[in-house]
Length: 159
Image 1 (spheres, rainbow, N blue to C red):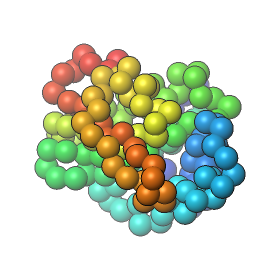
Image 2: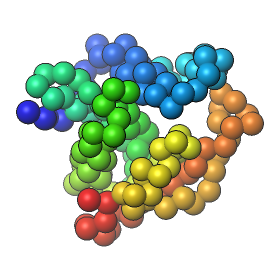
Image 3: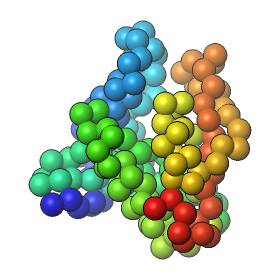
């Protein structure tokens, strides 16, 4: 049985580990993973009331998580969407995406933004997100990351 529930602050180490395992799925070299480790660590200040962190569980096993950060009254950022490396490609990311989109709509936002790993861009495009630019990685200045947007006004897109 799959359920998505709010994360607890004491799960921060688990969330950091999951993020690193998920990122490692893409075959990045050890030097790269070390360079981005601090950026990937889940920070305790993310558990503020307006920061929405949710964990996907199947039969009690934590398999992924997503988080939303309000930007302004109309825009929310999908800050995290990570799935355990062993579970990538099994539909859990789509479930987390659909949950995050539904939550963002329920909260009254009109637009969702995100910065994607280049390997994940295709996933977000398949959900209906559009690339609107790129930003420079804070860990590696030579690395460019896709910036994407998704309209929350179309209730049928992304499913």
